[in-house]
Length: 116
Length: 234
Image 1 (cartoon, rainbow over the protein chains, first blue to last red):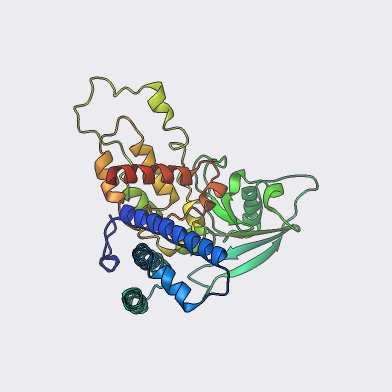
Image 2 (cartoon, each protein chain N blue to C red):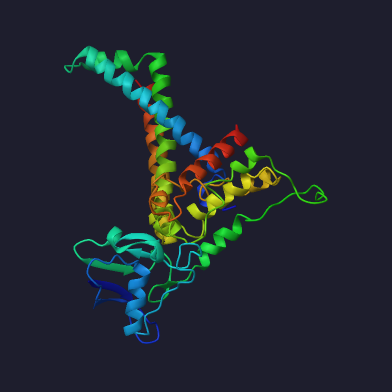
């Protein structure tokens, strides 16, 4: 069995399931957004946006999507990095940057969703 | 016909180079690529390549012909030659020892890792372990692999992580034992494969399927292993 501590996971199956499950959530969110945009037209006001995103179910759904996006991106970029970045220093630096960025996006997303 | 062949002798050459040779082939004749290499070796004894059975059984002469891996002995010129030129290179992704001879060490290491032998903890039957014709049929398309390495060396995932990703050939063999009704080490075999590299680095590129000289389907076998890992985990 190949183990890699930097992966913070040991199971390939878990990765595989998370990748597919998060993709489903992202697809569902995309469909909801596109349908809402088509129904409401392109001339949107801030009040309309706030009214839509501010609903409790939409806040939870958006948070779920942000978490799905972060985990999907982490697994994907971790895979790309372990394929193409052969120098350990560069790979660790890159993954560190990705990890911090994704964490930042999640925190920022929560602030936006519950901060207004 | 113009043949461009990869040459490298570590004792005399600083780096590899392509050597262009004009090989005389009688009009209307369709030779195998191995025959062409043999004709070249008659002129230049220093040209090195592996070959043995010359009929696609031993798996020694896997090379890259005009960009596609295959066995030189069963690949006719009419199948690979484009614009009257044949380009022969060693299998990609493995260290070159000399000319078309590659170091297969890492390929065999992955093969060894999947424990390519029957494991059964129950006492041996008095004569032999029997298997129903249906169970035996599950091994068709798996046991025929001759370990020529054409598939694994055409796989980008194997190029990037040859030490961690088992590769199509090794995984086809792994499934050959997972699918065998006489083998009872299924749990240990699966546990050894459940990490992000060994099986899951397969991205379904399917180069392995397109090059396999025996017409086998490693991607399908990898899909079966993935299904087994999924049902084990859920």
